[in-house]
Every structure is written in structure tokens, then in C-alpha cells.
Image (cartoon, rainbow, N blue to C red):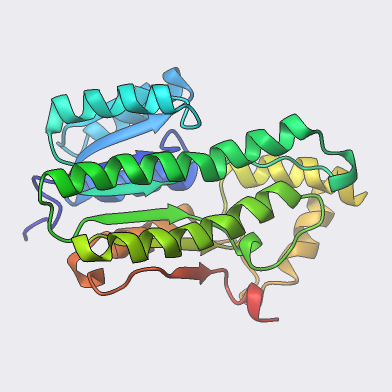
Length: 262
């Protein structure tokens, strides 16, 4: 059975763990050359060893995605190694669990730099490569959040940055459509990852509840009564990276077990 990403190069940010790593694995399983990016050098190199087990070429890069200088240097390395970029998956993201009244300007800016500025920088770099190399049906997919569509107490900058990401996705989709590049975002609900566990610990304090009690409260609001797995989200990211999604662009699709409809 042929692998539809064989010979193609896919970039995944935030790939050391969670959804990002799950997406990188999906790409590797389909035969892609995989560039994995994360701030943590040791973690991204460990992830590379796991992904290499699928028999593909993997390039791990320790990069601050909020730095234009570091991203430009990273793309020099990517183009030197593989030439053409076919898929970009923006999965890097951070949050700060505080009420808006307690939030510092520095914390606000840090979340927006990682969650939004990095998308602006990376999308432009990837699109320029795709256009220069005449890539047909290039794909850019980003992890947004259900929090882009419904506000959450103690999660203000994350909610706002992800809402802005959805809007930015639409603009990129319009501007890159003439080049055949599809640009979409995915809005997961509660996903069983290390990041969510960390958030539950911190935000439960803001809510004045124990972490277990807070998780039960959140699950009660989800019609399907469970967390999503990282693999479930990655599977949809994989579809949006495929030829089957060539006519889908400018969307922000929710995968939240029904949470946003009640």
C-alpha cells in the first residue's frame, strides 16, 4: 500500500510531546521526511529517535518559534536538507492560568508571541518556499482550540490568541488560494496530554477546586464524557494535510466531543 506523503517534507512545531508529536508520527507513518521543532533540545532529540523508527528521515531542531531570527536560520537548515516544504503543522502553544486582573503584560505577550506571532512567521516562510518551488496543493494546518470559540475563566490570553489564530487562518487562506495552498486550523477540546494535566493543576487553583474535582466539572460539560486522545486530533490534522482536503481552506474545525454546542 502506497504512503501518500512519501518523498514529501512535513514540518511540525511543538513536536516534542502531545499533539505535535502525534502529528509528526502520523506524517512519518505516511512516509514523509519530518522536520520536528521544539524549544526543548533534549526532548526534541528524544522524539526524533522515536519517529526515526518508522524508517523516515527526521530533522530535529531546537528553536524558539517566537523568534524570527531563529526561524529564518531553521528554514535555511530545512531547505539545505530537503529543499521543498510540502506541509506545515503549527502545534506549538502555551497558556498561562491566571485571571486577567492578575496577568502581567509580559505573560500576555509571551502567550501571543508563541500562539500567534509564530504562526504569522512560520506560515510566511513555508508559503514562500512552496511558491518558489512550485508545490502543488501545499498544506498549512494549525492547532487552535475550542477556547477560541468559548471563553474560559483563567485562560484569557490563550482564548484571545487562538481566536486571533482562526482569523489569521482565514486571511492566509484567502491570500494563498491562488497558489493552491490550503490553510486551516483545528480546534480541539480537552485532549489527554501532559499540557492539559499541567493546566488542570494550575487552573483548578484559580477556580478554587482540587484538580480531580475540576476535571470532573469539565467532563460534565462534554456530551461524550471523555477526553480526546492526541492521536484523534492528529488523525484529522493528517486528513487536512492530504489530497482529500485540497478544496478545504480557511476553516477552523472543532473536535471537542460536543462541548461547544451546549
